[in-house]
Every structure is written in C-alpha cells, then in structure tokens.
Length: 279
Image 1 (tube, one colour):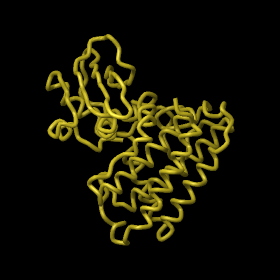
Image 2 (image 1 turned 90 degrees about the vertical axis):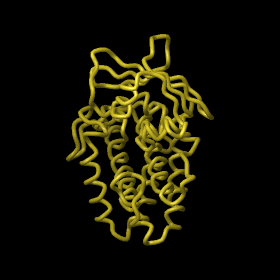
Image 3 (image 1 turned 90 degrees about the horizontal axis):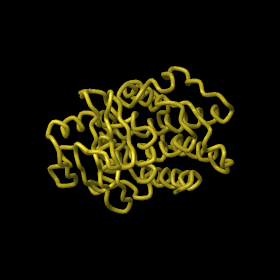
Image 4 (image 1 turned 30 degrees about the vertical axis):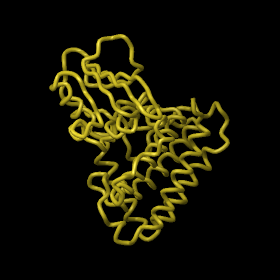
C-alpha cells in the first residue's frame, strides 16, 4: 500500500508538471473553455489555488485539534459534490478574479505551501481528523483528494488542447482510495429503489481491482466485491472507471465506444448514469 509521504511527493510532481504546462499556454488559451463544464482554463487554475488554500487551512487547524467548518462553508458531513458545486464555482471564480495577473505565480506558491505543510509529518499525523464538507476526514484522505484534484483538473486543461491526454497512471490508486472513503461525495441523489442496487466492477489495466458500488437509501458505498448478488456486472479499465465516477466520461459514451461493458437491466444502467455525474 502506498504511503501518504509518497502521495505528497506525487502531488508535488503533478503540480510542478501542470505548472510547467501552464507556462506554455498563450494568453488566449487561458480564456478557452476547459473540459470542466462552465469553467475556462483560468477558472480551473483559480479552483486549484482555492483548493490548495482550503486544504492548507483545514489541515493546519486539524493538526491543532480544530475541526470546525471554515467560514462560509457547510458543516462537516452535510454536503456532497452536487450540493456544494454552486458554492465552489462562485468561490473559485472569485479567487481567480481577485488574483488577476498573479494567477500562475499564486498557483505555484499555494501548491508549494501545502506540500511544505505536509512534508516530514509524524506517521500518526496522517490519521488526524480534519474538516471537510463531506465529513471529518483524516489527513491521509485529504492528501488523496488533493492529488486527485490536481490530476483531474490538469486533465481538464490538457485535454482541451490534446485529445490524447490521459490521467496519470500513478494517481489511480489514490482515486480508488478516495472513492472507498468518500463515495458519498461523488453521489448525486435521485431515483430511489425499495431494495439496494449493487453494481460489480471488474477493473483491468495497470491497477486492477474487483469492486462493488452499492446504492441504498439514497446513499452510495464502495466496497470490495464479494459473493452477494450483483444487479449489474461492469467491466472497464481503472482509468475509465475514475473518469466515469468523476463525470468526465458519460456512461452512454463509454458504452458506445466499448470502453465500458455493463450487463444488467437497462433501467439500472440509466440510474447509474444519473447517480454519478461528476465531482
């Protein structure tokens, strides 16, 4: 199992690579829409800056025993990506607007500051609970969330100009760990069924896994695949799975291109696409 220290180094490497890439973009490219719906490239960078600042704040506070919400943010455990999206959009754009020409230097500085905070921490610190809208999460999970944020939003930018851009393979284990702990963050409540619905995924590629997604009582959970009956059987590589769960690859598109196979009732396949629309 990868250590938090290793993943902090991955955050630093991915952030530096993205920073170098951003330096190559023209002024016009920063104004172009990213593949993150509703955000131009510059808005995505503003969001990454805001994220680094928020993670630095909540981790610093958590290490001091303070798990209260940051001003203006919902109580821990009361929000998910769906309910928090409008607020995060507003805060990200406002942060970008406030920085003007200092957007790229601030991206470098805030990312470096977060990695400095995390570097050299005692092993026990990784389990310290910290505030997050999804709930009280240990520092190690916030590290994984940040790594996923940098990688996914880096893809949102690169794929706008390079259709062949992909997710960093080294980041895939962290994405899976985030979903194991905070699947509720990726779940958009909608259609409800009287009994739980179980989707069994066989993930292939460089990071293979056997996983079940269970939707019950308008909540979702990720757990190791077991022997319980599965309503829908699914097969794809791990990068495709992550793109599905983070809303970058719509289920109909993945099925049409053969990147995803789903065997089960059409109604439940449609429900899956409605429940998992993006993070």
